[in-house]
Image (cartoon, rainbow, N blue to C red; front, top):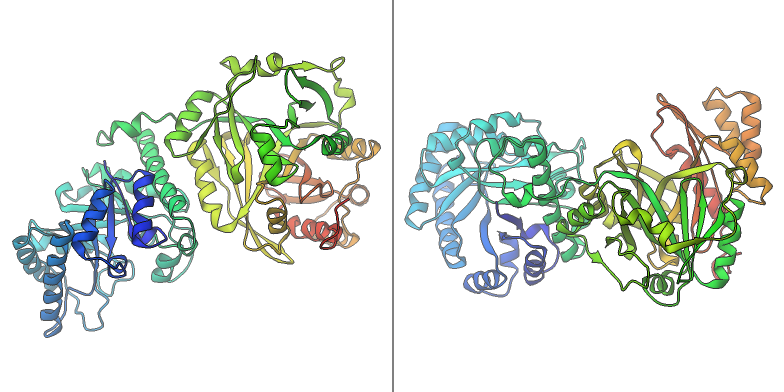
Length: 634
């Protein structure tokens, strides 16, 4: 099945839009009339430019306020349509979208509208044009695709068909099963859009908050299953109106759009193998990668900062257990946690250090099949990464991730399972768990980005991995709002929180600015006994983020905690949250470098959140300790 996208979905002028759409891999493009009218060339020139990019014009849209009009408005509507047909012939396309009328003088009535479309079909046929009718969710008389289909059915003309749009149907909770009974040859075109579930005026919701399939909350999987069951074989096209996208990168938006279609159709194929109409290109995509946890986190730094970072890791119970056989790379371990520190003077890590300073440059994720995960990621548009390997080194499948960092895939079934034994040699005797602080695994990784990039990176993770989105959380910062979106792999073995900073006055935004876009702002480690962990780290000289007494007074009022436990929590600077599933304890390090910090958590029962209610107090505490502007950090 061919892929398409409306020009209105992509920022930039028409030339920029078309270049980005072609580069992303689309087959065709919907020409939004406003983009054409703003262009400084004629319709024949636009048609040639599109075909020179290897694209076809799948649709011209929109034609508004047509059906149900009294004279003289009805006569004028047909005259307008005739002029559009001539324009389309010059452009080189044969399908136009007519959306349900909003005209104040339009009259209701299925038969009246059908009569209008029957006559329009006669005129369209003379110029080899097909007309697709779409029900707008906010249409004056027609807002349901079932009514639109009934008008098309009664018009009974071969040049008149139906156009379906997932937003218009799903926003009104219209039963998608009704689509299955529509003849495939009467579904002329399909437009796809997702959106967050918001109680809002339909028009405003559609014009400002649509997003790519998989980025919102609408049930596109059920919608697509119904479309395909009806026998539809035409293009899959995106029509996205979104304020974030308008100011974004044309290439990034177009790439996300293509990724979203491929991911959606892959999931349809997996959930509904009985639908034989899906092309083999989707069926051959490797399955979403099942994440088994974070294999390693790699820091890049220099020799001087390595000493300071190593001291902090020692205070947290880590041991410098191994060194690389040929590079200036050390391995710090504690139970199932691996922290790599890279001080090489060349290669990717060094380039990342030059750009961002001491920062996380690489994340290794353990998966069932590393090669399959890499193939899926690159098929979905992720940028592959490779660099020359030294003697004895193993090539690890990798892609570019958030903020220009790397994401490596490692599995246990290939030679990748031997990299720690093959490429690293132990330093002294094996460390004992009696010397650690009780940290067991990486609970989650928090990545910061500009808010405009959040939807893109959410789609990145949820399309590559077998992962789901948690509800969006808004964190109140004295400098503004930070929106946090957690992505959780199946079984919660991989948790990533994506934090979108709207400005650089927030703590997250300051970190982003100070580190020139480094993505990982903090790492969260899990422990089975956070009280013992906090005590063990304190004995090692660890200095936690101080939480004010007022927080604990409020905690006592909100939760029925034992007084002695609350007193101990206050002494250890532990924070607390609970829901109907369990409890959550957490404490933090002070800020290191340009905004990097560490978190330590304990989850009880089935608590699956991140202590969101505590975030404003944590941010306030971090800002109190931040150095004055222009002053060096300690």
